[in-house]
Length: 435
Image (cartoon, rainbow, N blue to C red; front, side):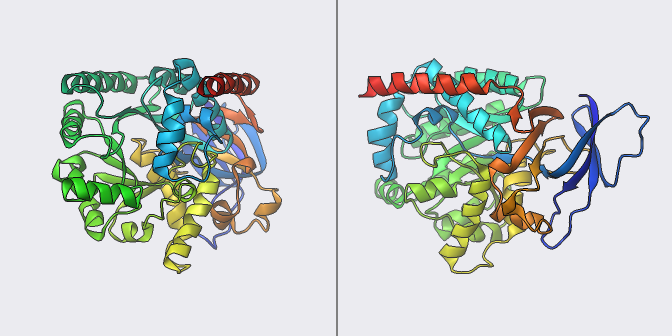
């Protein structure tokens, strides 16, 4: 549908206490033409008219941290800390992954994300990313695809892999859909030497690519790094110029005040992953302190192994509640700020500056929700409901660049039955090899 209108929808207000008004949205060539009260008047325009009666209209959600192939390991490890989780459960299984295993995990993740309202996501992994690129293209979702890297091999081999990763990412960014961006993503300061991180910063400048990294996720990580290098991981990143590029710092749970001050530059974005941090017992990021410093904060689910789902609505709710508990202050973070993290902030941090909002000229990335859900009544308090009561199960329809990816709960670009069958088949093979 190049030109269409959805009538009788209720666009979500930008603030609490504002009542939604029955409206219509007009979309042409992937762009929002208008969102306006009442019925569509220009009936002679040739636009296809759709009826959105009984549905709320919302920007799509943007998940700024994930590892989609790892969806294949959902449920394999509970109740352990990060290092044990990685060393004894995740990495041993990942060594048994094939490209087809990774592909099956990514397909499963894409289906789950689209079904629960995500219209864009950041993916970081070390293998099978060509498959990820192809699946993103065919499914219609938006993605920042990042190549994960560690200091493995000789310095020459590391440099060769880095250059190859950068070339792949730049090639994928040329996709004509405008739905794909790229990022260089060294795994973490504790798995990448300072010399290798410097090479990655240089490559970011050379290839004009943003950077990402897992940072200060646990207290142990910070203490070990201070013992080895005499400074925090975040201070080391500043020292080598990591913050001179657009940079996505994921977790940032155990940052010092000085670390947060160092990060408070326009180039830096934080990906707050509350569910993963809670499940692994890592701690609670100090989001209000970040916001006070002017840092752009976004929200990510992390992988399905440490969450264990990819429902961004659940992430919103838990993320807000954890801050109120940590600071023992219900006003520590406002509903509007949390919503912005998952929509406009998330989209912009992945290079989709024109997404995550319902306004004329914005990309037509939006979702519809069933307003009749019992958990969403009384329906006057829509913004509060979306942060504190809604679920991905309430999402009925999804559009990206004006293309419909889900209609009345049915995925249009992915084969749901095949995806489930393939995921279980590959999981059984993986588990048999692991055991």
